[in-house]
Length: 217
Ligand code: GTB
Image (cartoon, rainbow, N blue to C red):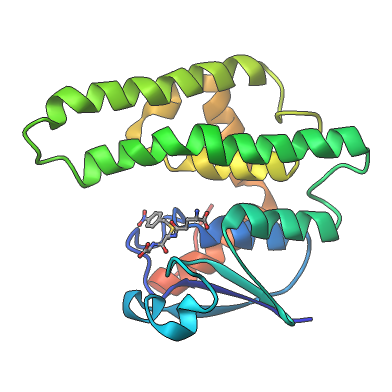
């Protein structure tokens, strides 16, 4: 059955892979599936046809036959549950991998998004100089804890899983801040994720849409 996802017609990041279609593309690639992309403009995202797929008028969405999904956590979980390569077979290990997906989205991503808002949207506010260090500290709390848990392991719980896919995707948003470099094991963890052939294919595909070029990594 054909898989169709939606993505920005032109991502505001110019192809850095930070928009959330990249994590869905990555999961599809890890599962060895093919897919099509329907680009949507910011205007089209708020129109009825797209709102029928995504009530919040965002990307990405995922369509497969009669099934239409939104929310990257649900989409990646759907792919991982139906195809090999993203979740362990053992039931307990599978539950732990899913726990890491939730941890990435519910516990680690929110302060990282808040940091993005503080830097990009609130940079000119008179209170920003006072608030920014507080927001940075909240990110560091999570990075400290994650760094301790990861230790010198390659992945969060045994073999690479959808939990790692989601955690690496979330941490990638910090790359340009330099904060990840304060945690060499987390920086290496993210680099391991980026080095996976499936990630590279996903990254290249979104880059091609946004720049007409492919990457050299
Ligand atoms: N919780 C949802 C999910 O995980 O699927 C969040 C989806 C979401 O935030 N989508 C964003 C969107 O559609 C794109 S990814 N925004 C348009 C809108 O809300 O009107 C967020 C994003 C956008 C741009 C960059 N960037 O340029 O660096 C990075 C991330």
